[in-house]
Image: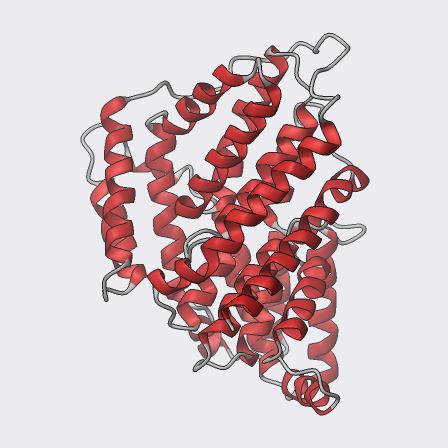
Length: 408
């Protein structure tokens, strides 16, 4: 049975890493779902244990934040933000800085995947109109969103999971994680500026771009409602109220609208991402039902590779995040952290998120930007991304280790 479980796990995680299974029209969500079904069919996760294996507080928190984000998107807030900063496009370097700053800040509050999904099409249209090279700015959006999301528990899906499983305090998490995030953001900007300082503008005329996309105009009242919800929710996160309850209460209040239909709001939720999470939880539960993970970690510990060592934890997190993406990597690693040592959880959070900038499959945010850009005939190759992502990741991880050393 253990051998069958390992085979199912390896096929599922390999497929998630590659984004496909040759011969099948499955994407990452489909692969995760099939892997979860396989774990149930082989009996490794009994049917009665399927729901308990899913961390519903994390799913609920992500679901609620998607509703809040949908409110801001339908209210035209995202489009307004993206178009407002285009005022600086006549100064490309400064525009890059503003873009990265805004996307990092919003990612810390509303999750990086959501910001990348909302910003990318608007940004592409604005860049085409201004005849700017889209590559450095799209890379800047993805990299800044990843880095900015490191600062808070709600910045990205893996942070939400870490915060829930580790029972981490919102304020303490932000106090520890925000400084390396800010320093890494500055480094990321300087690296992109150095690599593209003479290539911000396109030499060739931009191709025609379809401009009839359904971007809602700014609705001040609906946007104010969304912003107020973000502020109230942030305040509630500093209280003792469970984060998922605060988030779902605010989401429920936003759904009670006289103008925005429930169907319109729920239609903007990323059901694929939620399904991917549920599938991953079940796959991990199937693997945990064996003695394999514990035996592997005991073997590593016997050889001196302890998860309590910041360098070892950062290295394992970085490698695994770029093998299978940072969300599945964190799901695997959280079971081996000490609940009484929150710094271990902070290091896993920051390292797995920073590692997401290394290569394209390192984070879902990268894939969102690259896949959406492809729809506009903008191709960001593995090599182009890695050329920027590699130095950004190395410097970010060095900042993390330096921060850890400084605090100790």
